Image (cartoon, rainbow, N blue to C red; front, side, top):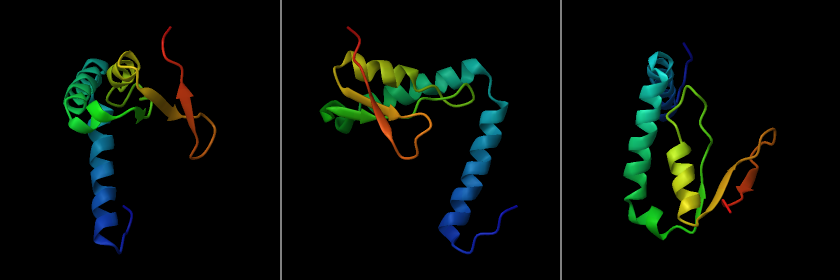
Length: 98
């Protein structure tokens, strides 16, 4: 176990460990379901509705799926940016479907 002198850092580390444990036990249908719920929740927010641009990670198979969110952003004409592979702190703009 890691030692953290800062209580916030320690709490974040504990939450990350818990999330890894839960995600490690989830099946693909569960992570897809979480992704749909996440998209439904976020897209109802005023901030989403007003946003012209969305920055979002592309999920892996063991994470809640961001695919519904990515598809909605493009379908709604928002500028979508995702992390550029192999580049630290770099984003790439995704083309809208034509």
